[in-house]
Image (cartoon, rainbow, N blue to C red; front, side, top):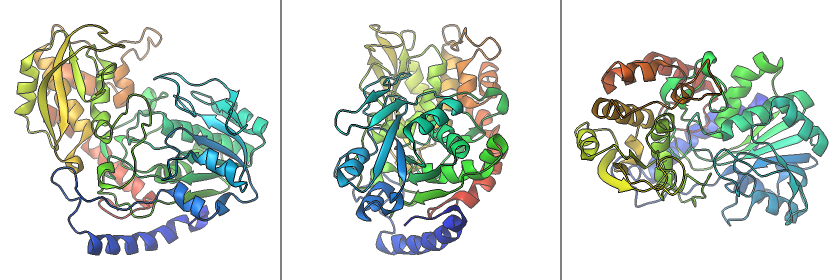
Length: 438
């Protein structure tokens, strides 16, 4: 089903209510609490629904696609390959985000502009592109419709949602329609964590949303269109279509679906990684390794100066949804490459209970308290006005300053409750799927 902006929210409310009733009747407890679910909820992404309708939503349009290796159908074929092979879609260009369209680039890198051998379509390097540059690519490709299909992981600092926002702004400038082929939020639909503040916006948080937004990319597109575009571009999108996910509820994490997991980026290997990432990614802003260069990035965290005491202290904190194991690892690249690091592995016990931002706060508070003389915040020499990377990740200096002052984790978490509640009120009108918070 596709909806233009005028129809989007009214129609989704009715369909969501029906889906909620069906879901409760069919499987009342399969994904509520406990360990990873043994039963999987049938879920159909927007891409598969559009393909089943013969790509009717794109009929007669000149299409540019923003996607990466996660933009697949359940037959595991790329949506771009399938669109071109179908002969039903006029694909004029692909816009590759961080890591690239085919996924060949590491973190902080992209594929250069090239002609894709399989399809003959030009792939534009859109990672970090300004809105002007994005608009120029769209004009060069001759598109009148932009399609977005990327599996997000639910964290404000995961760059794909900001690629989408830049593409939306560019679409306003060139008068293009925008279509989102929606996918589930793998960490569920609950919003968590601190709000971004205007003084600390960057490529890992371009606008004011909370750290774990609890929205699908389709919902975020509606939010961006309704809350930000007119202020930035003087107009909203001429048309926004969201091809919704069938069968997903807000209280279902990725392990509760029957979908295959395709790595959205090289350091996001499993759904468990996505669950902890909204919290453990904060260690990018410290001198501890966040596990890059291991087979469990963001689940393994540590440094050469860390010992068994960290795991012991965290185990006593009763952090929701997770358990901590004392662990030792040697990164093959990135921080502490080739050095033995002591630390912890974060194990998922209850996916639905994991609160990533709280997890990050608990781990940072304990690490600072135990290793104060060795623990350090990463600084960026290229940004003298905002030198601390963790401030860009959390949205302000507050978390860093509270940790440095010795504040307990409960106090750190409590500091963002009012802004989180305000975000919850604002986002409610843009939610498309049934479940908590709707």
